[in-house]
Length: 203
Image 1: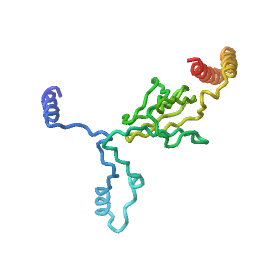
Image 2: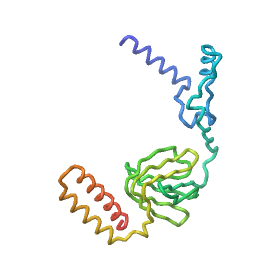
Image 3: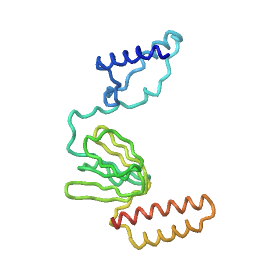
């Protein structure tokens, strides 16, 4: 095996010198590739029966990426029971990802980010709208469209600071008196959410 090491390295080097590289998702064609090889193989074995459809046959073609970066980012903010923002064109959004706050501008690389309880900032010119999200996911597409899916979303200016402080105190008390793992987990979630709410109002 060790004797084949130099040969392997040389083959890798020659491939690199020829400009070989792995294709990215954005390099692939927008149209769904046909299953011609599968159909040909099927007809050779069972020519009297039409071949079954594969999952790719039901997939809608991926929209082509724009040749230039748009000036605006299109944002959709969706809850299970309503749509807060639908096709809104903005300059930037900042989402509370679990890895840290993430700013999304037009032309952002395609990304999927899990969201933690925190503030979603929507920047449109000099106006900034802030929503508190309880958690969810952000899907940033290569065509400068961002889909933000959350369980709950509330404008920050509609949150009562007194109720937040009261809820935080109650859940901290429940956490201190919890006797089972389930009670501790439920109380910890309440503490985390209310702590994020409090930080959003005071920060």
